Length: 121
Image (cartoon, rainbow, N blue to C red; front, side):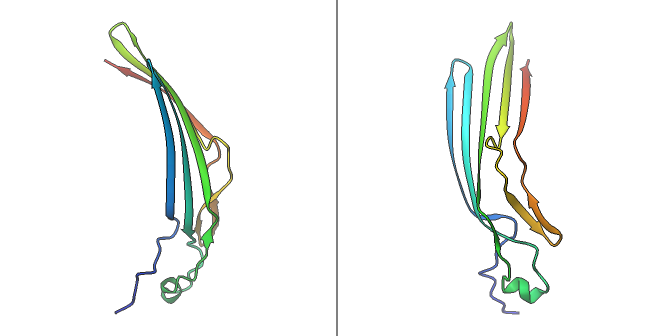
């Protein structure tokens, strides 16, 4: 129909993001820290019609950044390779809104963590 869609943005997806990471490895030990920044996240909760979507009558969510970190250790137990890992996501336990929909705003996860044991044979 000839509608110009060049200014249409994908809602709930950062249009700008960047990250910086540091890794360290020495004698089976490893560690990492990642910093990620997210901005220009267009809301998805204010569309009343196709025309309002095409005019992008929506706002943006506040930018946010997250820090993740992890440790690992690889060693052999006899002939078997074993790797232990521990990761922490959102280390600073930052509160952030990362999505919206017609029912409201959705916050991202607070601090979460996981551990793993990898056994190779």
